[in-house]
Length: 93
Image (cartoon, rainbow, N blue to C red; front, side, top):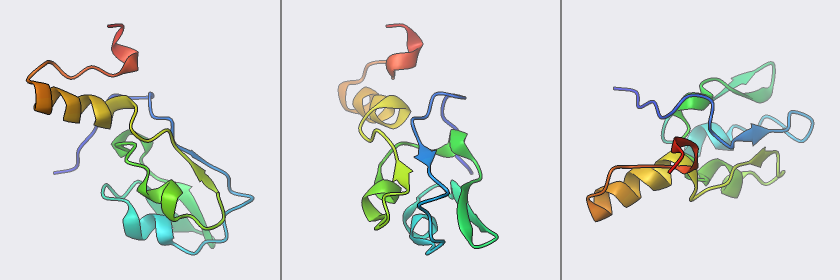
């Protein structure tokens, strides 16, 4: 089952100019957000991004930017740990 988080709220950005197409982001992303196309990484499914930050931390060329520890993934984890309803910055809480 492919997880989806909230639509259009992910902070993930990819700079195609800096990307050399090494594929490291594909290797470390737990939700297959990226694909390689014409020798460069592309964001294939941004709404599946949980903002864990693995892609940005492992990109030696600084082509990926994401605010890890924010957004949906952090809200879901916090909700599970505290027993509260998950809420990220976009829910208006």
